[in-house]
Structure formats: C-alpha cells, structure tokens
Image (cartoon, rainbow, N blue to C red; front, top):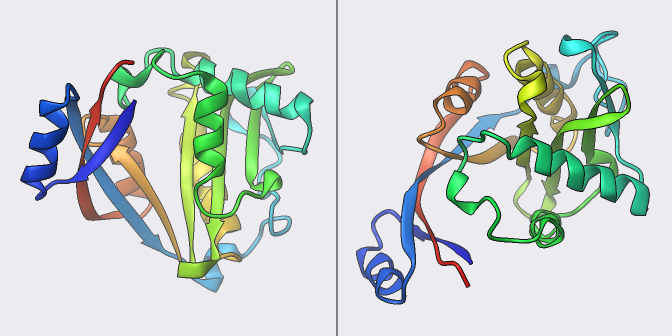
Length: 206
C-alpha cells in the first residue's frame, strides 16, 4: 500500500511510520507551461505524430478500448519495471490491474491518450496522459520503457510528442518523479519542466 505526504507534514509522516509504513524517498512534482506553438505539427488531439521513424525501430500508437490493448498496456508496464529507478520499492507490491486502475483514476481517462510502444509487435513501453480539465492541465501519469529500448533517445522523442499533444488539452503538463531517478529528472529538465512541490512517498506491504 503506497501513500504520499507533504514534505513539511512531519506529523503525517510520523503517523504513517508509526503505522508500519516505510519511507522510500522524495517525489518531485514538476510542470511545464504549454502554448499553441507546442502543439504545432502533430497529427491530431490524441495522435503521437511528427515522426516517421521512432528511435529504436519501434512503433508508437494510441490505445484502443478493449481487453486486447489493456492487456498490452499491462505487459508494457511490467516490462518497464525491470531495472526501474522510479520508486523501485513498489515493484511487486500491487497487481498490475490495480496499478492501471490507479492510473485511470487520475484526471479524465481517454484511451487514445494512452500510447503503446511496440517493437516487432511486443510491448516495450507506454506513455499515459490524462487531461485534467477542471484545473486546465494534463497529467503525464506514466512514461516507462523496458531496458531493451532505453538509451536510444526514445524517451526524449516520446516526451516531445506528449508535450505536443497535451497542448490541445491544457495550459500545462505536470508529472511526479522519484528524485533518486537521475535519468528521468534530467529528461524532464531538458524539456522545460520545473519542480513546484515535493512530497514524501511511503509504502507498507500488506
């Protein structure tokens, strides 16, 4: 069971720890302003366009509603957890179906804004974007890749596409990242994200 508390909420952190939760690290909440210029050149409100060829020889396509693509997203998530630096303590504590339900509950779930990263038909990663119209933003719920397609510039290309598509849905793109995950923190900084809040992640195995 994971939870988060504000970095300054010492009383809350102490209460969680007294209840058996273990602190696993700080989460940086980051955001990037979006403009009309960011949205130029992509193929539509949900289409990760702008590239004829993706790095790593992969295909990137929007998800379609239904069990088939939901199963592919689940496999993509599991593949991306291998060797992850993003809250690795959470790996294996929750069923993938529960993780997906949690991701869908953030903002408004639109299947076509969840993208599958495929290589030779096999899921090797995903990008999950959820609009939050009530606050005029888009949440980058998850961006993860399996080790087989890391280090080839694919994350940069995917994040550029996410910024472009999100520009039609909100005024800023937000995300949360484990501060210990140096590659991810550098990725977001390269693309103009800046920290605006900090929380502490805790977990307890049930």
